[in-house]
Image (cartoon, rainbow, N blue to C red):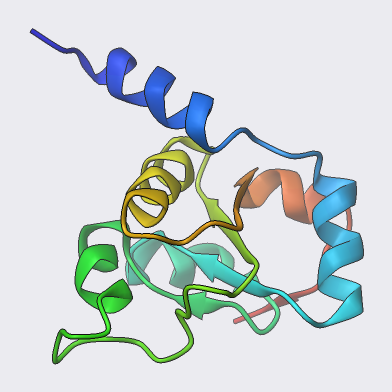
Length: 124
């Protein structure tokens, strides 16, 4: 039987975490999609990355599926996607799901605390 750690290890192997400074450069370039996979309550407490789409991890399959009535059009298979969450685990798991759904350029930037500590731009 698999444990949560097993799922997380597999997700991290498929979508390794990148250094936050690399993500900051991509954000500054303006040609990548940043997605916060935390729920709205968590985002309300801390804010999120400036310009980030807000797609909770529990909804990612529906938002990413272009045949779903709940599809979020910013989630395009050819987009370069950078995921953030509270600590990095949810971003890794969401990234694994996106990879399995055919998204190839998916990156885990870890937790929002890493982003803010590095001076990353934020919004409410």
